[in-house]
Image (cartoon, rainbow, N blue to C red; front, side, top):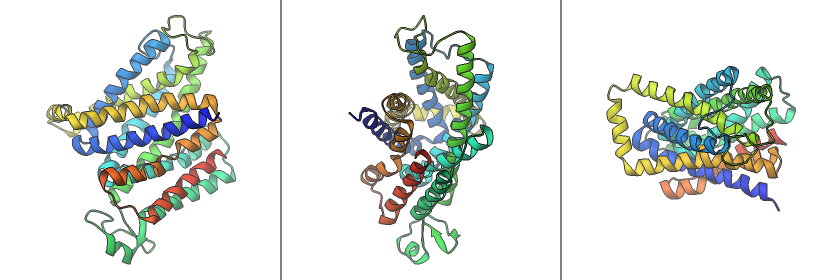
Length: 338
């Protein structure tokens, strides 16, 4: 009973762990070395997974259109989105960083409406307003309150409609871009997956049966998301490595220092395993046992679940306003799946 719901809750916990691990790693090694190494680890794990599911360690059957749309998704979601997310972790931490990831739902709704013609009802519009309201409640405070509780490097004097920004303005920018890019990248991924299924149909393959060379006899439909993720991660690795070389003349030294930082590497491994590997596979499994709406709603609990461990591990001060804002923001996301 409630197997899917428990698995979906486990996904939210897994993504919470990912954010905590990534915050530590990003602050120790920087966002570009972190993402370059993370994409490398992800590709290794995905190659093993595809070898078991498809019989080859690469996305078999993917055609040119599939690669095109998933590559675009990789650029938007991974290269731009994950870079901004890790930069956001550096400036404002994983707790606020995950809060801004709730922007992915309204972004996906708007982009899906523009590119795929998907309907967007009144609940979705209300959800956008509620989500933005929750984020605003968490990051804005009255001027007097901000003067009492402010610390160096927070709002940087930025005032919005008479309220003071209580966290780093740079962090708000990067985290907002991360949430927007994740939502946009999700829609591009959906377009790529549609082309992938069309390619499978053209090859005369049934997604309900296992590929002939697969080591594990699991229906082909379960390998599609992993194959898509590998295409996106491949583009992500190329993009992050290119940025690392362009913006850092001593990129070899940066990678070497990052790879020899044992604490950072263990955190990087945790972020990789709990994120693109365990998180993705468990999220797929959850949708088999419960509705997509219920699963997505439980997935969105991460900004709330991360509050307590972030406060505990990083000794962060958490206000009642911030907790209520996170809950309101998640409630707004839930409206998209009602």
